[in-house]
Length: 231
Ligand code: SF4
Ligand code: SF4
Ligand code: FES
Image 1: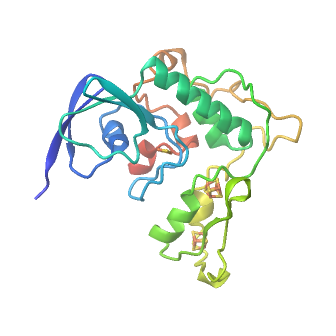
Image 2: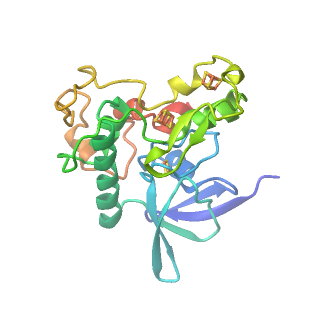
């Protein structure tokens, strides 16, 4: 039998199935918590940190990723405090500096209110979100990909002992990779990277005033918002 708990998210009392994450619950109720590494129905690893929220307990608050935080009865969550918005914006800014050639990341930066990138562009082709690894393991059941190395050498590849033959050519790793679609103007050349946001994919002014509300923004498709993947 399904069990439910009562949770407060941004002042709204909501009912959630036990075992559900705070992020999935928020999205279900139309609360916008930007996210990148989360895929509905696939285990979360809390890699991108965009989905951070404040969990308030005994008068203290703790910042934590909402995709790996399971709902508990009486839980109090704040997903859009000034502190969270500022931290999330900074995380989005770092991501777009790391990988400006991802439309998904450019879009999430817009949704998080990034207007300027203060960090040097690195133009990397992977942000280690692990979406490919988890899709390969949990949906394709191929387990052909994994993380290799540590620190700055960490990357995704076919791990030793797991032959490329494990790959079922399902294309899942490519379809779910945030790097698979470049910004509308095409890939940016080294030295010419910039923040997008000049085109009509920008959030309209009303949506910008409502960072905590899901407005079904078109950007959601770009950053693979699970609201779109779940329908
Ligand atoms: S194409 Fe191959 S490596 Fe990619 S998800 Fe499918 S099985 Fe895994
Ligand atoms: S290859 Fe793509 S999906 Fe895989 S970890 Fe890197 S950015 Fe994420
Ligand atoms: S850390 Fe939660 S969506 Fe990436």
